[in-house]
Amino acid sequence: MADRDKLWGGRFSQPTDRFVEEFTASVQFDRRLAPYDIQGSIAHARMLRKIGVLDEEECRAIIDGLQQILDEIEGGEFQWSVALEDVHMNIEARLTELIGEAGKKLHTARSRNDQVATDLRLWLREEIGHILAELERLQSALLDLAEAEAETIMPGFTHLQVAQPVTFGHHMLAWFEMLQRDRERLLDCRRRVNVMPLGAAALAGTTFPIDRFYTAELLGFDRPAANSLDAVSDRDFAIEFSAAAALLMMHLSRFSEELVLWTSAQFAFVELPDAFCTGSSIMPQKKNPDVPELVRGKSGRVFGHLTGLLTLMKAQPLAYNKDNQEDKEPLFDCVDTVKDCLRAFADMMPHVRPDRERMYQAARQGFATATDLADYLVRKGVPFRDAHEIVGKAVQAALARRCDLADLPLEELRAFSPVIDEDVYRILTLEGSVAARDHYGATAPHQVRRAVEEARTRLRQSA
Ligand code: ARG
Image 1: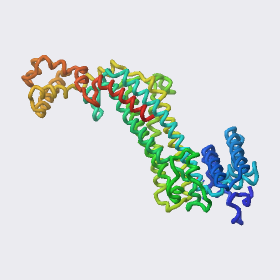
Image 2: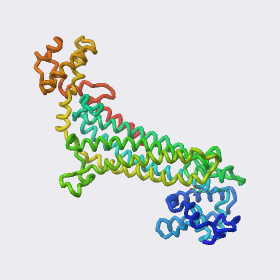
Image 3: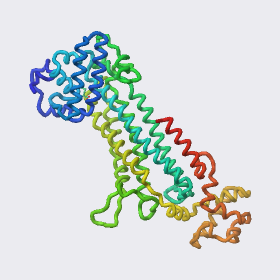
Image 4: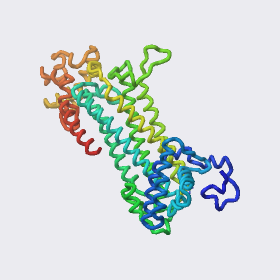
């Protein structure tokens, strides 16, 4: 393309350096915004018609032309040009090619600065919707699993050492809660995304009597941005989304870590469906938990994008700077990564099978009911610190005999404290231990069932 054909070519007498043209272009990646650019342009044209800048015929021609361009793009026929720099100028140039003079009027009272910020917000608003939908599928799968396994006993860990028995359902509900907070963060973030920059023009607003409230309404924005300088320059909405995405990925990564541990031969707590694992090219026995491993690994790129976007923004004076063109690739990758990871997890979780027997046996090791014995002594009048000491001694004895606390004969237990009676064996069982933690937020099976009900309601209310 000759430089005089560039949409901003008027004040230039020398052509752009070829490498600089490539270097400064964004169309290679921002073409992804095309449907939102067109949506924004249609609303802008309607508003220009409303205030009399465009006549009916021009407005019609612009809308029809833009719709044809969208068809061309979706059909893969659109000729993208790096010389036209970005998605906005590619579409505008094509519009003028298609409809002539009227096409040149579309950019009245607008700048690419408010245009790109608007496109990005329209796009992100929609993507957050897709992410929330995938998240809901995963959360529902966790609730189904929690309900089905409300009585399934497993060891609960602190320091990755057996601590106290818990129910598998309770453990799944812990994951649900983390993801529910991620859901709330995304919903909250979307409220701040859904504000319209259009009308800020380059930075100061425009001399035309535009109706920004009308355009905002057409585009489904909650309101126009209150300050034009802020509207074209800040990308905090993208950073905020990336922060929410980073937290979500951190949760999925922890979740992945547990699945990787749990599928190892040493734990063998769960089995992942074959469809979500791969084998080894050399070791025939292997079934590797690739999906969780990859999700754990992918968390790193989202954390990196968050840092990248913060760094991109931090030294920019008002208002728009070309630096901001660099917001797109990290943001796109955050969205794609989160969406793919959620999808893989949402597809996988309904097929995850816990091995109840394995987990039960694992909970029997490591003196998981030691705290129950201490609490028992307290109920019989022993101060807690003394009870702790007494149980420590009993654990030592059991260790020496290589047996569980529940396997020590009554006389032996009574040697540690005379308040111990036959009824101690009931509280030393795993079932007794989990059933005894019977209050809001705890692990008893019927509390888990109640928590599942409550969680279903909260999920519905935040859908
Ligand atoms: N491609 C640019 C971006 O992504 C669009 C806005 C360009 N504005 C400008 N004044 N050069 O930020």
